[in-house]
Image (cartoon, rainbow, N blue to C red; front, side, top):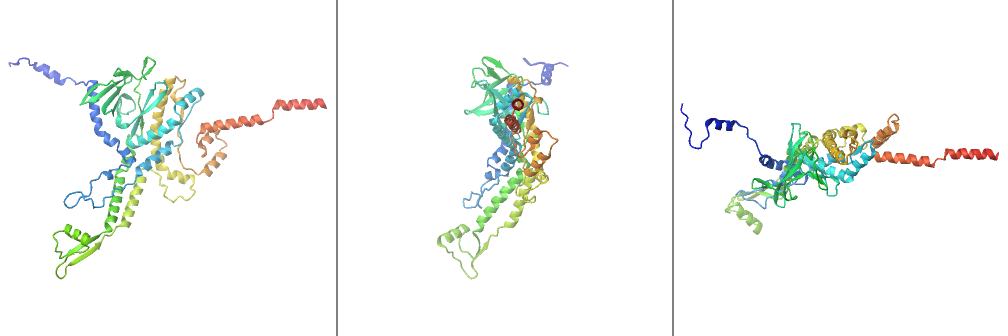
Length: 472
């Protein structure tokens, strides 16, 4: 067999080896691929937030058309909606963290540092973070050091976040891409465990971006002139649930059906004020001419015997619509795992058992959020411990969620009084009147000190007895 090669053509075996050789991406090629994969997902990510902000799908339905296919401005076209999604999200987040999450440890110095960093501003930010996570499925926090050398946290919206995980459990980051628009430019940050690279995404290509400084590759943060890295990718996921999906998709189709039925019912109400005309022997050319004559002249022409106009009144199916909407509302509460405060089956002062039953679905949903938030808070604490060089471990810090559950305060108070075999800390933590157990225990300790200071001194009593004996 004679093999003939054309000039400048590679031998056959070299071409085969090239085809079989694995293809490696550059860093920039990988980032572009992941950004292009992420862009189509943004619409779904922000759907929950859109509904939360009073922008449901019913507002974007096609307008009503006339028989010629044109938009009919005279046709009733209501777009009514009920924001049950916002109610359910607020209900869950308020139940979980409306009472601030508290931290406890035996190391007083470490505890003061943690409380200084995770202060009341953080409590407020945590509510916003978990609200966003409930809407989008996940939200991100970036720890950083500001120009004054203080530890801070920055919230990164989920629609800007492209995590690169090391495993299927999605619990450890290999890298992190932040993609966002700033000053009408598409900007990209690529974070690793050692540094961050800044790019500008322009016409499908990544070019170095010097918007953040003289170098487009920088350290995680700076202490003076020292370049410092966290040693890990500095982004913390606050997940809504194990699936990392929005609460909205538990009941979105039901909300859409309810919004459409409400709008259609209102449109029918508006149309019911008008009459349907049944024409007999009408001499006019078309229905438009008939309506113009009727509105302008308040009269129409008919010819011959048996000619005339009959009318039909539109009937609105109020009862059937009400029953259908009530059914949809029950489905939203049930599948959204919320608490229906309109139900009266528990009476005016329900017992603790009845309240637990009423909150059972919400408790299930909130505990999923709690478990994921607990993991995120432990990771955040590790950054605080590392930066401030605290002499404790994350496991030494007790994180307590104080669920904002409605309770029968009389029952709870009686249980607290009768719990003589429990520690004072346990009783205080579970008392319905206590919002901050740590502060309450400090107040109790101070009250005991003040009370002891008011008691007569034992030494003073002995001196009085001695003086009395001498006088005798």
